[in-house]
Length: 311
Image 1 (cartoon, rainbow, N blue to C red):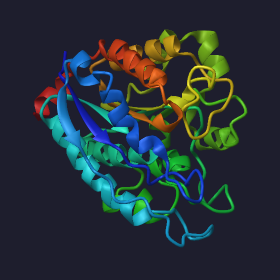
Image 2 (image 1 turned 90 degrees about the vertical axis):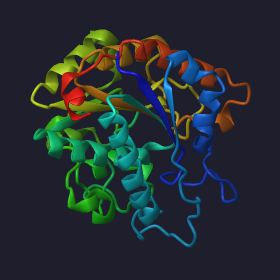
Image 3 (image 1 turned 45 degrees about the vertical axis):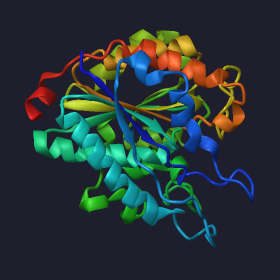
Image 4 (image 1 turned 180 degrees about the horizontal axis):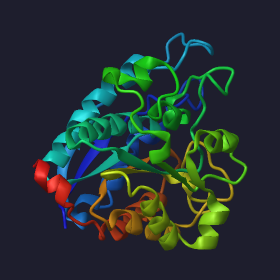
C-alpha cells in the first residue's frame, strides 16, 4: 500500500460569504478532521498545510467575473506543486479542503503529471452538485466553488481555466460525475458536453461498489485519475454541515463503498475532500463520521507501478 500523505488546503476563497459580516467556515475543516486523529488512524505522513490568502471579496459585484480569481489562481499553482511532490515521492495524496475551488490546484497537478507521463489523466467527480456554471450557461459567474468543474474542463475566464496555458486540465470525455441530484440544473449541459454522469437514483440502483467499478471502466484510456469528493453528495439528514445542503443524497456507508472502490486500483492517484463546514458541527459529530469514512475507504489504497516509475 502506498503511504498516504495528508495535506491541508483550507481555502474558502471559492464561496460566497454566508452573511455580510462572516466568512465561510470550511477553512476550519482540516483542523476538525485532524481533531479526530485522522492522520494517526490512516498511518499517514503529515504533509503540512498550504495556507491560503485572506478571504476578502472587497468591492466585488456580480458581473465582475470570479471573485478572488487572482488569489485562487496563485493558490492553485502552489497547491499543484505540493501535490506533484507527494506523488513524485511515491505517496498517495489526501487533500483536506477547503471549498471546491481547490480542485483547480489538483487539476493543474494532474495536467502537469499527464504531460510528463505522456497520457491523459481523468477525474471522478463525486459531488451533490455539478458545479458546471460558466459564462455560456449563466448570466454571471462569481463563486469558483460552484464553477469548479466548468473551470477544470476549460470553460470560463482564462486566469482560472488556463493556468500556465493549460486548457483544459481535464478533457470532457475523461470526467465521470457521480452523486448529483436527478434535477441538477446543469445536467443537460453535462450531457451535451459528453460528460458521463450517474446521479443518485442510478448510483443507488446499481449500488455504490458497482458504481465505483463502472466509473473506473469509463477511464481505461487514461493513465490515471484523481478523485474529488464534496461531502454535500451526502444527504442532509446525515450531513447538514455544508454550505448548500440538497435533499436526495447518499448515506455514509455508500460513500465508504464508493471511495473504497475508487482507490482500490493502481490508477487512482489521489483524493480530495471538500466543503465540510465545522461551523455547523458544534459537537464534532459530523467530523467524526467523515473521518471514519475516510479511514475505512482509504484502507483500500494500492500502489501503482506508473507512479513508482516517476519517483
